[in-house]
Length: 424
Image: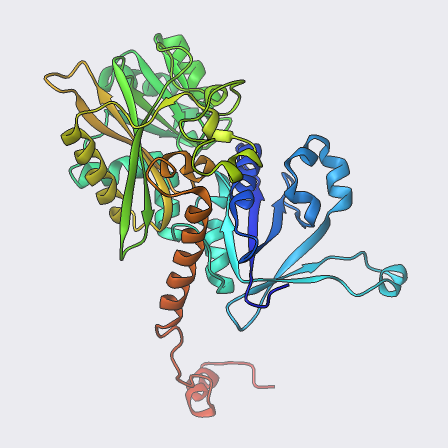
């Protein structure tokens, strides 16, 4: 192997409802990695939280028989090193037999490519682990990831910044459990039917439902609580156009993509999980073009969704949405690639009211289907993600991270000892 190659740890799976979606996105990005420069190292997080590695985990077809796949993989633990990398260390069975076997495998990882959706993989948890272990990672940081994952907090931050959002209310499960009728009354008084109910910290349209009656609203909220302890209820925009924009970069430089207009299977319903990931057909607006090498060697994922790219909007409206996407990118202190979703209420004339809907700090398929028509092939997109991660890591390590003062010297400890500390 070329010693100049970087080992890229590809995190996929995760303890989250979007587990399978993550596998698709991560393996798409893996297929796009330039093998002359990068060696992918899979880091699969099973639904029970166990971590695995092994080359068979890079083959999407093998996930059809997960038990057999994991029999060929091996469990690993992460170990930080003092050199800005981590090691994946094979976990072996204890006992005499384990000691007689070969030494455990140790795989160095130079940078983490985070392909998890939802849960601790996207809400800042894994990002915080990478920062604690001091390894570069391709994602927005802890603050922006946690904020972006929470639809309630995201809307409040945008609202305070003067960015329009639709009317909404939110409930925590402990609030809802003790006074459902009051919560339903609040929704009817402050929003009115029809409404859309969502888990506050899930993606991929999981747990989302439309409610046109009080009974439907009650059932939708109860179902959303199956996925999250916080639920958001919004006014349904009936004459809605969904417009999405991806942004690539960091605090120094960021670029917006072309816009897309996703198309649900039924114009009267919200975009569903099945619409996004389980279409039998659809070219994905660029899934096969420009980056054909990567797209054809991995599942299509979000690329299979019916969409119009670029979105059919006047130039001035397109530029306004791209500028607003950049503003939100910086507001959330994002890095890497994100996708920001907007809604246009066509009933609000003369030109329709634009609203911020949500931000995806690790978007499905890394939004490559928006970057290929923007002139950035998938392999270049992944390369940029790795380079941004390494640059941010260098900047972070260039700052003062410790403060050299000996508070544990004998002189400094005298006051503690006088306070009754155990000296013997």
